[in-house]
Image (cartoon, rainbow, N blue to C red; front, side, top):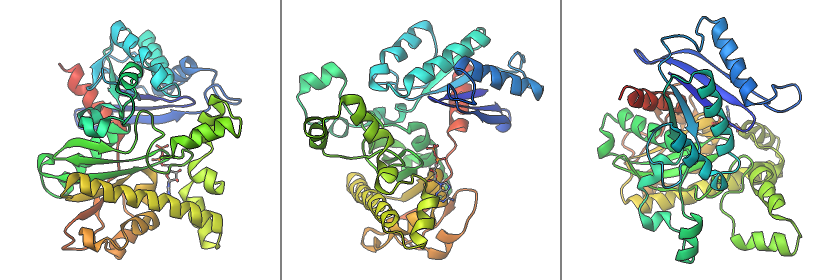
Length: 377
Ligand code: ADP
């Protein structure tokens, strides 16, 4: 299986042998359309093909059985991994207004891969799919129902492939079936989202109609009073695109302190930098708020699982997020939390009623599995 994650300025790829789920090759082509990079997505995929051919793993290999693509927005139509046909591609195109920053690049990736190997099944795996089970009470915004229906304004959620993979892996770490386990998954990367998973079924998540809602992220604001948007338009005189850029690209940790990398923020905090401290505190406060919210949504939590760049690596964020939650049944073990390790692991104290886990996410593996399952029929 070849897995392609085509973003706006990069293409990540991974070639997997599904007999034993080993990684044959992987890499990233960056700076697409930027000075010093390749011209466009077609050139990027050709670079991937050349790279693989150099390792005798050419895209013309008869062993290559299917290509799996990450697609960000599936709307209400695509709730499962889907074999790409012309009609499906039209469906993904129709969702561009809901995901203008993401779906176009995903579509280009599919088109170019199809041109290179028209004989292969191409499978779209949607970031929204795992959240299709959100009950209406969690998925609906309290706005005029007709307007919401007409314009698709509801909560779809994102990072679904990761939330699905990590909630399953967390159950496995506890030695239990996913159907028996209630999990709060905290996916903290550059983008960040939390989800509440009851017995393997997602019942709430922090991202909404777009990936802008919810947690504080590297460069995205997360939750914001929509009234602030009107104020920016009326009083600050910003147009729609300027507000979009402000909230998606210049906010979050970056907006608060000028850095969006948690490692750099940690270094600055150690030197007593007040802006970095505030950014960290706002980030952690929002996270704790949602841990509390999702505890109430689930009623019973078996495990809180941290994943992605910050969740897997920042002991400081985990410690601050889990501090003083004994009354919610959460007791972190500071020594286990501080250990740097690679695999899934528990960082809660023995006897903590709620387990706390670090579970490395692997979206490419999850997409390869979904693609394999579908391509096999
Ligand atoms: P993406 O959402 O782009 O896939 P990742 O999941 O790779 O992002 O997360 C990237 C972020 O992880 C970086 O911006 C950085 O803030 C954070 N990160 C990576 N390594 C560490 C670390 N050792 N300590 C703290 N934060 C880290």
